Image (cartoon, rainbow, N blue to C red; front, side, top):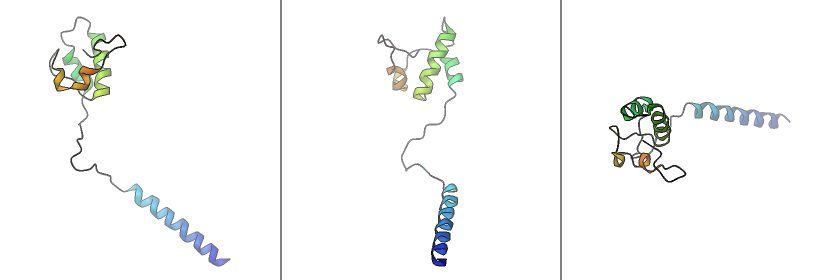
Length: 99
């Protein structure tokens, strides 16, 4: 009876030790994996939509695309090759969604 209690106590102690040690473990990405820095979508979209005739609609669409792709092409139009994901998002009608 006492032996079972000792084993149970050891197992519980080991479990607690595992939980505590895993909480302090730092995970790093594998070498060579790209980590894209967080982009300021609001700032990038303000620049992108600076000359738009409908800035609110432009900023809303740009913000959606930026959140999805993590990038916004430079300038006020074009340059989709810099951020292919941004240029490839389309509406249900097949038109480009991202300004």
